[in-house]
Length: 229
Image 1: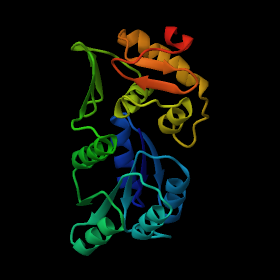
Image 2 (image 1 turned 90 degrees about the vertical axis):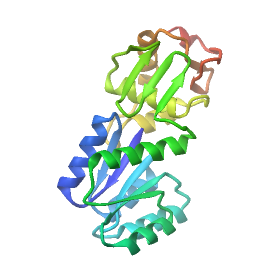
Image 3 (image 1 turned 30 degrees about the vertical axis):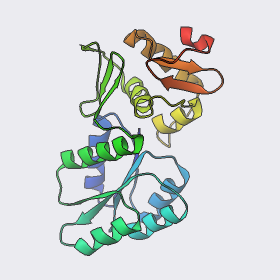
Image 4 (image 1 turned 180 degrees about the horizontal axis):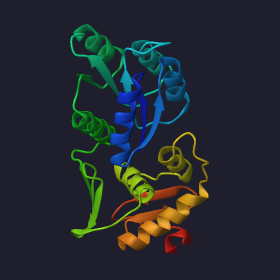
């Protein structure tokens, strides 16, 4: 899952980005409203953390521009604790939730998980597909209760499929949501990581759909020779 953090305080930006990456997310950052607006308008994000008090372009304007342009990614706004009017304005402009500064990092992470879960139509932080269980709070994967050790990229790929379980996800979409903006993206590497995941999980839940992509589903049938990889 790919997150954008738009925050002009460099220490707070680093804190949020580090905490999110530790949870298995891909994170892009911006230090002002203009850069944040550009990234949110041109890159596919699963969620955005947006400070309202930004230089160059304030966060409320950024949010309004995104929504007018049809950008529908969930947005969590950061506001000063005593600026209740900003919270109301942000929610009215299309924000999905807010956190008042100063805040506990764990609260922000929990609210991000909630936005991602809500966007995927999931009722719990635990994603279950047959014997597979993905604990998005701890970034932990088990099969029949046994822990599976995954690399960060393997976990991100599996978690993205998990948030979209039952839906076919194209290789291109996976590339866009698994790598940050500076990564040299190559959709062919997705096949390699899917193959590694299948071997480590050793259960038939990741299915290749011919010419379309992959689907995480307990009951789907493989339709491509890639499934044997």
